[in-house]
Image: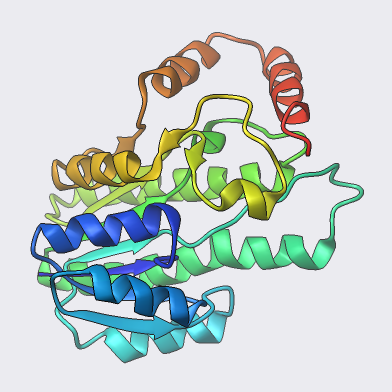
Length: 250
């Protein structure tokens, strides 16, 4: 059994690697920071291959797939991603485009390439890391929220395509709320809601994935928030989201 995880050097990706290794999976771990991957490799019990690579580059995504496509990979976890805070008219365009490349294009490319192989052998799991943000519009983090909407809706659509074909291939989306990771430092925000621990989210996600749950939402408060939001007008949701986001400002 073998799993490939992008964004594996810290946070949820790192804790997923630890948990999967405990469950007996060999691992291919992908991230930009080679030193972090090497440190993680020393902690793991199973066979680990590390690949230092930036998946925001389309050629790098193709290169990654070509490098590992002959491996017998059972699980693909598209975890790499980041956020950015600020008014859309003022945020840095280059950084936003890098976010789109990482949060959307890399997920799209790797999902498509590995999905074809999984369909051919009628086996495999793909877990795309979205967010509770994927259910909302996100003033002050507009590009990030939009990117997670893309990941969530793409995953849902593919899941239905597979279901109608009676495929044994699984695809699902992990939609966590605030998690104690490096995310808030990179996005330059402070969480105003209580954050879940990364190791809890990682274990919860893997367990639900293996049970073939399509949308995985850790934490009761997150589940209630999403359920409650379905009954509110869009303008009310936008005002609420803006106020929540504004409180995150560093």
